[in-house]
Each structure stands twice: as structure tokens, then as C-alpha cells.
Amino acid sequence: MNYEIVFKPRSLKDCKNIPKAHLAKIFEHIEKLSNDLTGDVRRLTNFTPEYRLRIGDDRVLFQIEQNVLTIYRIRHRRDV
Image (tube, rainbow, N blue to C red):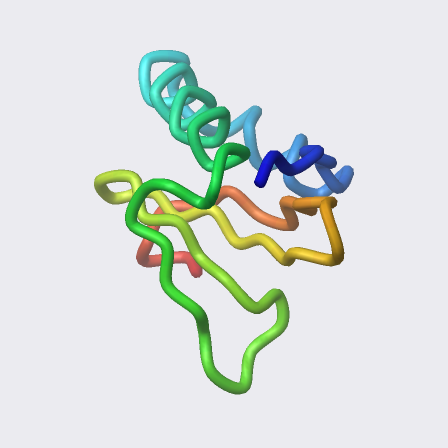
């Protein structure tokens, strides 16, 4: 299933603090994520948003509603 990716304003602000080399890698993984949730995806318990994607030391927090994948935060693992 292909998902439409939507970025929340807070996730775009998070991107400003990430080095460009890491950011390129993150966006590659997000693009792969839109095709059948490939990657290191884990469902979180008692937490909103419901899912996280691990990319090295960075984490992408997102939620899925029907065919829309909404990205809430992109942070280093110690900050999430």
C-alpha cells in the first residue's frame, strides 16, 4: 500500500537542527516508508504518535490514518 506523506510544521522545524548529510539519509528512509512501511518501524505503546522509524541515532515519529502517513517529529534518539 502506498501512503501519502504529510509533514507537520513541528517536524519541518526539527529538520533545521539536523546536519544535511543525516537529513538526506532520513528523507530516503521516509520515501521507502511510504511503500508498505519498510524499514525499522515499531509500534509504540501508550504514546501518540503511534509509530517510530529508527534511522541510526535519529527517530521519526509518525501516525497512519487510512492512506495518509503524518510525520510529527524528527529528533535524535536522546531527545525523543
